[in-house]
Length: 277
Image (cartoon, rainbow, N blue to C red):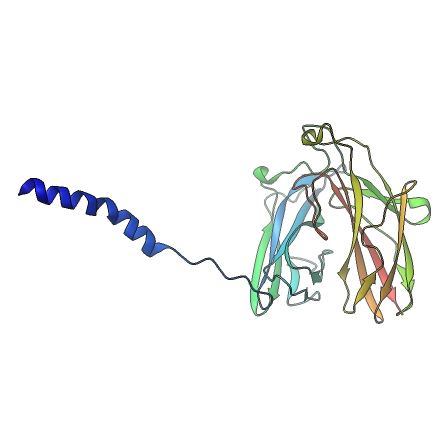
């Protein structure tokens, strides 16, 4: 009789952890087209040549379809200090990495710079910092020596920048409803990432709306680069202050609509402030 009960109890005891595990399972969240929050994300930091540091940020819009506008203010701000640190006010669906960088001084030390977003009634914030384990090699892919493209604006591309901090052009003024030509100068070192050995070096540009209340139509959001420059036309729906983002990438993997494919390297952000009259 003892052997019989033991034979029954042992299988039951073996099933007990499985029963507990099944009871503790949580259903995966259902995908939502709209109505969800937007989380800021801190991607890491890198040192600048002048001794300062760049804190790199992105975001996660949990919606699958909803594009969310959050003007600088109580729903989109940094603290402490100036609430506007060059962050986007127009948020594309899903995860977007390396959207911008904020420069902090050489003596920033253990301080933090917190970005807060409130979308669809939910506030989420994230601190940027200089913890050693969060340092990234944004200006060079360490295994190959690949560096980000150089983007330029202005006459002959004399306003130049490289990496997530990138370059911001002088403001341009255009008329609402009229196509305006945007020109970007771009160059690259042609070095391929180690995983791309045997493949041709790749590089490209992606233009997108970054700030502004009205609609923006970009004739070709991925204009081809020829002889070191690329051009397309952009039409702004109504007057106001806008900003375009130019993502310059090279050999850093497949690019989303505005997402840097390489988590550490190699991409460059360019920003074009636009005054629409």
